[in-house]
Length: 190
Image 1 (cartoon, helix red, strand yellow):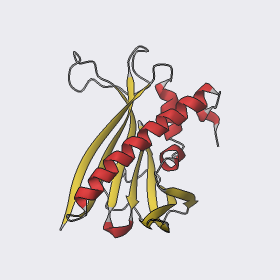
Image 2: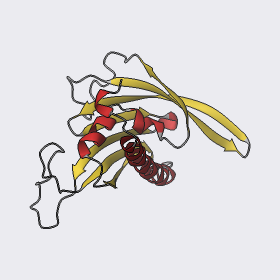
Image 3: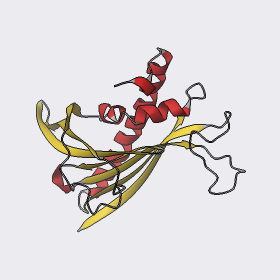
Image 4: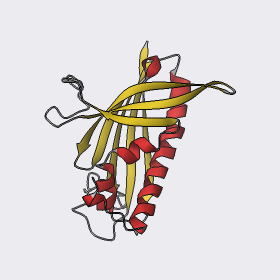
């Protein structure tokens, strides 16, 4: 039987880093891919027509970008194997969302977004997008992750996903901080 697990990860964005820069970095998609824990390589590939048809996670009229993800898994000490799977991405107003159709029938949907950290005294639903908030608000990179697979695999998969995706989010923020400090311009990058 297939089951789902829902995880939410939030990593604070340093006040010295404008949230619009984090959003621009997410819109390049690659920082999210680059920090996969067992990544060996990745490549952009043509998107098959209808790949997201019927998947309510994706907006029906917005373009989908596809990457083939290659990961090196350890089978035993000293024995590894490279596996690959497609991952589909779509830009959103607050970041990027993606779906990975991984081996063993595991499907993961992830929504990476820049969110204002709501002041505890603020009313529910008052969070704003990065372009419409006061300069002194705090922000976070938030990932909402849904993992689906065989119920026998889920205890291992959900713990592994929580640990690895917290690491991904932390490394994405660290990379953006470093590149921003060295003058990298995400707004004009290819």
